Image (cartoon, rainbow, N blue to C red):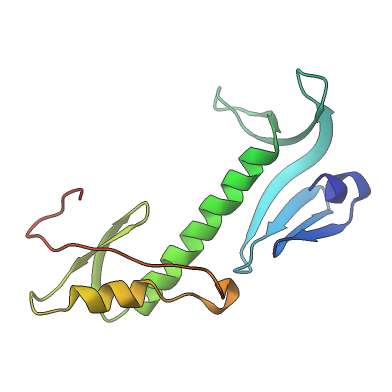
Length: 148
């Protein structure tokens, strides 16, 4: 990411593409979806080290320059990729009546004879862009939604 910002170029690592152009930092995820950060710059953090800053809505709910760091961007990438995997599962379950989703859970209204194992197997299918990912799903049945 730092290379992309400093050199206004593209850098790739672990299937994630970082590019800096037109005053934006773009992070292209393995799914092809893009995260965007406005006006990225290299700055100095309170410890004297390099940090990435960008413009966004801060704690005061106003537009301001925000400072971030590597692990925070990794968290954003992981969360976004997890969302993409969940959306893939939801699309593969198009024959089910999905009534809600909460974080990494899908809530399905189904006939009692529907196979929980079949739903879990379907949810554990990996998209082509995540080939090699070890993925499994667990589930439970109940008459009303509750946390497991």
